[in-house]
Image 1 (tube, rainbow over the protein chains, first blue to last red):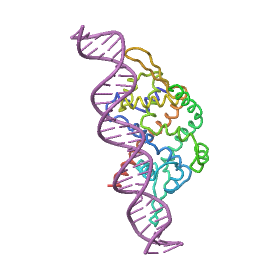
Image 2 (cartoon, chains in turn purple, brown, red, cyan):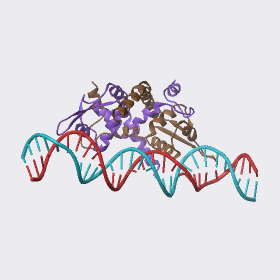
Image 3 (cartoon, chains in turn purple, red, orange, green):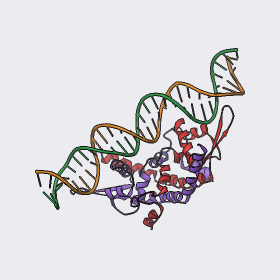
Image 4 (tube, rainbow over the protein chains, first blue to last red):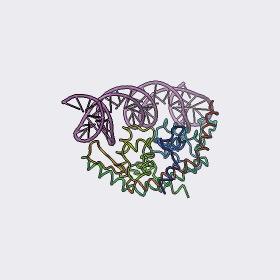
Length: 130
Length: 130
DNA sequence: TAACTAGGTTACTTTTGGTAACTCAAAATT
DNA sequence: AATTTTGAGTTACCAAAAGTAACCTAGTTA
């Protein structure tokens, strides 16, 4: 049953603290660029900073840096600096990051499958509130 | 192959605009409370506002309202108001929301399975940068 | 000598999220 | 009769996160 599955996977406020680290991990997805960055890193074994920036439409240099550092911190992305001038830095998914990528692809599949329904719902909603 | 799958599911900056709505849908997950709210709504067919607030540790009244409205807008959550005093409002997942829940559970499973690895990676990272 | 390069960082502004107080109208309490 | 309580919010105000633009580095090229 789904309800039990949810209970197994997460924990609720009923427990005091230090509650569940899952919530903490799930917060990884609660930012603007992490998911998309991981999906793009799935496209090639290695990507340089500016290649990645080109693939992720709309991301700023600063936010890409911030996002990549925090993914690196969580062990999802590895960062290799070549001490050259101008610098060369290559990013790639770790095995852990690759395993996450598979899950995120399911999510992206779902989005593609249901995009029309969602856009319709949005249109209905905006008509209703006029 | 995974690389082709990513290309099929998303589109990149190379195309000018109106690019892909998937990116727009995926942005649904790029906020702080949506994923967690949907997971909690999976625990019961119907949940009242304050029940939900009790299940989602740390969410403020305002952010829960904002989050629920935007999920309603996307057709993932339905909202039923009973015209009583004091008011009673019940929230539940739509079929679309339920289908999304299944994907999010995979994500939560992944988080649970890998939480130790991630915490270790974080510890390594913080030692490195000392 | 100046401009270019890749991968950033810094300072500043805007947007998003958090906190606390307030609202509404009827029923329950004093 | 006046006050408090109730659930589901809203409003005003403040803090944190994200966006923008300018700057940095040091070797190579024009």
